[in-house]
Length: 191
Ligand code: GLN
Image 1 (cartoon, rainbow, N blue to C red):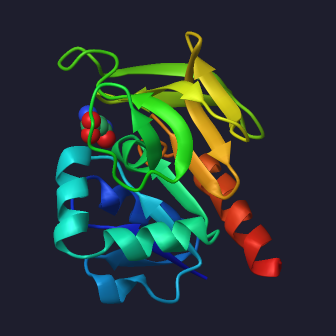
Image 2: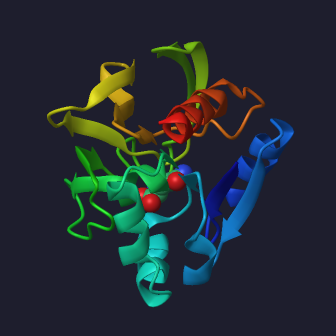
């Protein structure tokens, strides 16, 4: 199994370390030719405006979108969730647009928006969620399964093989969300 981690900007190393600690081999995705032969993809947190621009410049956007639409499992965290969203309520710059959700960027305020909160995550249990200038999902479209809410706001959702999370499961040492994602990847490999 090989998991590709988008490595053009942002917190990709932390995902790589966590997946490698679970015995999974990873490949950093920096150019179009890195995209072949993957079993799953991680879109890390960072700055979605920069990631969106780089994906276009590197000609990676269209192939990545095709792969995700074709069912390649994807774990998208924070800025990665913004890349997946079909609509962004406070930004016109849609990127991949494969997940039928509306997200709000920097939804908790720019400077004071980092915090931790424990909340239940469906299929995983109670999780300590770390938010860093995070978005949240304002609206979940048809077929989207809500997996977690914090203060009534959606912080995790799944649409088929796309898992979108507004917090940072790669920080803090709890590997259960990555394991949940790996189950999605294994489930697809068997089909
Ligand atoms: N605020 C960032 C954005 O809007 C996301 C923050 C993050 O990924 N931690 O792109």
